[in-house]
Amino acid sequence: MKRTAPSKARKTRSRTAKPRNERRAARAGSSSLPRVSPQARARAAQIYRALLDRYPDAHCELNYSSPHELLIATILSAQCTDVAVNKATPALFARFPTPADYARATPADIEPCIRSLGFFRNKARAVHESMKAIVERFGGNVPRTMEELLSLRGVARKTANVVLGNAFHVNEGVVVDTHVERLAKRFGLAPRDATPAAVEKHLMALFPREQWCMLSHLLIWHGRRVCKARGGLCSTDDICRRFCSNAGTSAKPARRKPRPR
Ligand code: SF4
Image (cartoon, rainbow, N blue to C red; front, side, top):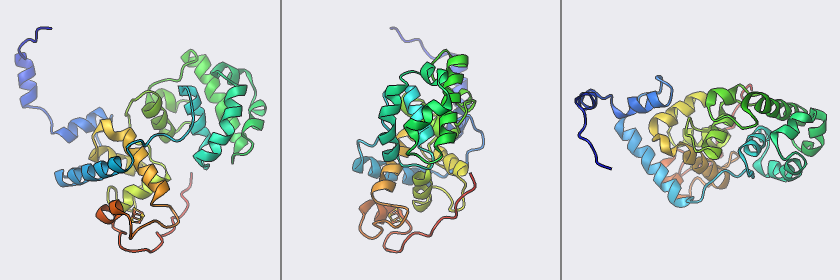
């Protein structure tokens, strides 16, 4: 197709364009991302590259074969390991193949399939009600926007980010779970006292949008394999030695106070 010369209006716009990270902030739907220096962004890029070299196949470790299964698995993963969720979901997904099947069932029908997981009664209710809403309000399809996902029971921003990033390849934010929060702070990507919401904003400001979903996988994989909550391989791991303020110590990381949920 023949390319036309840029219009005058477009030329004017490019001359007055906002700096790159401000444009990124606007696209992120937030004008309140923290300001970050080019040096901080360059360091973040080095961390990303090192983690990607180490974990090129990093991916979501919950098993699913459709967006609604991912949504359910993510709801079930609250306060549970992915391994435990993956043990429970095959029977659950076989018994209830579609959102309509959960909508027709009662929470009590769902409970036996997830009894091995903590808070299974609340989770059964959340699964039932979220699937019912998907059937009644979204034609049986998991919605693809943050706002719509947040309207579902049991879905907070972290769950919505998991679904958008992994099921739909939409980078609306960064998943901040316990590993991402811990690693982001230890790698100096967010202040030590930042809340999970503030950690997410720092990561959004430091990394290009197209990396957000993979970034959370990389941090989670490093968190599960190297930097475990109860003490990591602080003095022996290359990535840790390059980027973490704890590197060189073998001290156990300080215990975190439980955060009210
Ligand atoms: S140096 Fe230790 S605390 Fe830092 S990321 Fe590595 S394992 Fe975690």
